[in-house]
Image: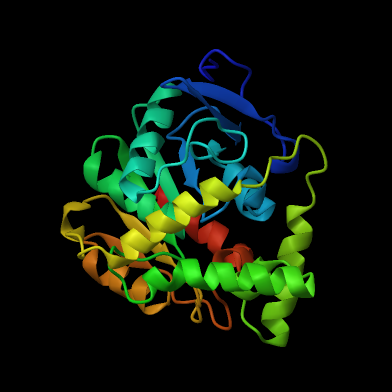
Length: 289
């Protein structure tokens, strides 16, 4: 088990060079990377459906790590983490809390993207003393319209991607306009910048478990978001095919202390990746205010 308190400082210059470490969480090893400042409240990133360490846009991670300690990790059973992948968002949230505590932190900020945003909402509601602030991007509340369609959309895009030899993230995360397609290609190029010690893709059983969890979240009764008292920053593109953009507006309206970044135009589910130049300074300002 590694504890960053006693390990070399996470002062790596860029995410593409950050070492992959592991920490023991109830008998399973959780893979993670960290970089940025040594002091201050750490910012823990919660990744999207099927995401592994290498799916975070390095411009986002490096931009945030310029002023914050940033930690990314693989959910249980995903990528470099061992164990079996939970099939509920609530169980993923419990794992997230155990991971944070295993690193020895008693307070963190959270940045949840898509499915990670579902997980972040549960952690923020259930662990008010652990979570200081939360950023929610490309995500929505339990029972939000269209969220239960995400699994079908994902499977369709994956099959289509296999036939056309095109990464499904292009159609799932970006708009089908000249601008959106170019932004998607640029994003995929950035994901290739790390050339060594790359993470493993999600396995089929783990993906199935996550798809089940997302479908359940989409079909749940709406949760009481007024219990989330932490300041929240909410962001998305104006044309999110996966978690339809009205969910973002609904989240911002129902969270008591929320700030909404105006929806990014001609941007989809990966709006914060596409508009990282605008998003990163806003996120840092929110975290530091």
